[in-house]
Length: 451
Image (cartoon, rainbow, N blue to C red; front, top):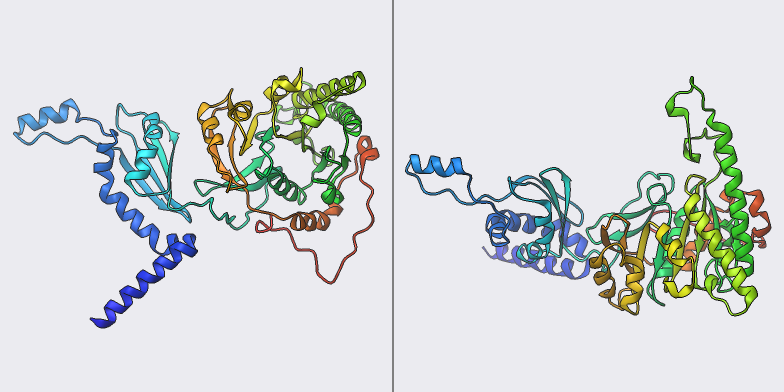
């Protein structure tokens, strides 16, 4: 009996230490078992308390009366499957007639408290089937990216979602995106992770950094083109428009539309071209868009109009030519002048880090989701890298970017400098740098841990 008591005390102490120092280990060893039992035991009463049950059907009531049995209870959604994950539980439910997936989404906060879990999100899998993703602990407190999987073209893992899944920036799905955030909010670290992830793929990087290049110049060995002032940015954007026109000529020449060509071989973008003819995709990263839109003199106003016009053209026409935009800024409103709201309307993806006022959050999500605006203004100052990500469909989720030092990002870009493609139109903007001086330390191989 004494040994049993000692063993239980040791296990309890181990559980407390793990929960404090290593919440992920605690969840995988102890938490997932306790949470699963808690959900199964409380399930029916919680669903009834949250108003997620339906009364018995008429034929069941009639059968109870005919057989002189007690009136049957209200029925909760049926559990189809419960699956543990490294961060929580996934509960798949079959809805009863009369229930709606919106009811589940509206009750997620009550379910979180009732099941004593950190977070609950709901999404509809198909008609009458809803999936509840339950997070057992605060995965955004100490971001730990899972092991990398096989790379997909133009799909970069950059952050961790609040439900424990990896957030991937998929340029083929969301070609253009806006990234807003105040100073020290983690916007630059997000951009740094994005560049480090793109550096390992066959893609050309073009950057505009009007802060004299202090953000992007250290990564310049992996950039095909880089502009560090508004005048150079105007010329770079004009060159990208010319490159886009040349790519469309290639696509048009290879369409070969005739009656004997199968539909599958007719293309309207670079990704359906044969690999030996496919132009290299280009990702344009703009570090501070406001610096491109501000003007004082008439000459600066003309330059500003040319810059915004070219950006709008690239946003409207660039996807099929393999040109993708990632535009960052502290504010992105109509006070930046004409054409800004037209450009913002073309940016499908929206990422908002901590902002200083609600108006800045409205610039990102006001035309998409009021709930995302509220979530953005609630981001605390002591969690840099936390952001709200949404798209034009209205869906949104909280994410947090793992902290990547500038040294780590530079090492990844230097190790992949041989992947930097040459593009004729962008050759005048290729950064000229001395050869890197290698010390005894070998440059690290890029992995998900340092990305």
